[in-house]
Amino acid sequence: MIVDVTLRQGIADPEGATIERALPALGFSGVSNVKAGKSFRMTIDAESESAALEKATSLAERLLSNPVIEDAAARLGERVAT
Amino acid sequence: MIVDVTLRQGIADPEGATIERALPALGFSGVSNVKAGKSFRMTIDAESESAALEKATSLAERLLSNPVIEDAAARLGERVAT
Image (cartoon, rainbow over all chains, first blue to last red; front, side, top):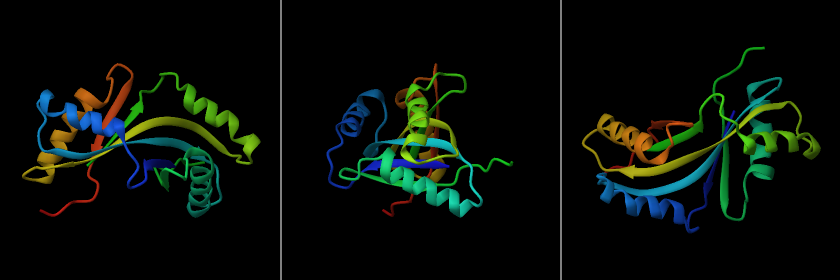
């Protein structure tokens, strides 16, 4: 399961802004809207994919992100057979 | 375009390990292999999707990751019409 945590719309993103400013000097043009975020990969034991997704979503919202400034979304990565 | 940066196999991940250790006390069981990573979202002006992907991959490997300890992969997010 993969949880993506991104800054909410309108929250200042100094890391993304710094990367964006540095790019032209490093030879990359035409890149805009750079946003930095975090991701977490994990294995979840669950009865079904939907149960795992629900668990990951709850975990993402309660523990892995700060809901005041961040959005969190869980998605299925590769499935591990048991 | 979304660039995912993850720690290479075998590199210690104290952030992931700490999250994993904290989970049972917070009511989440059955979660293992927690790995922390970074993600970057950006808009790239390019002739085609493959050109954008190539640019993002080069940028990911050269600037957004430390190839000694991290793997970087670029993938297409939503497409912005022009």
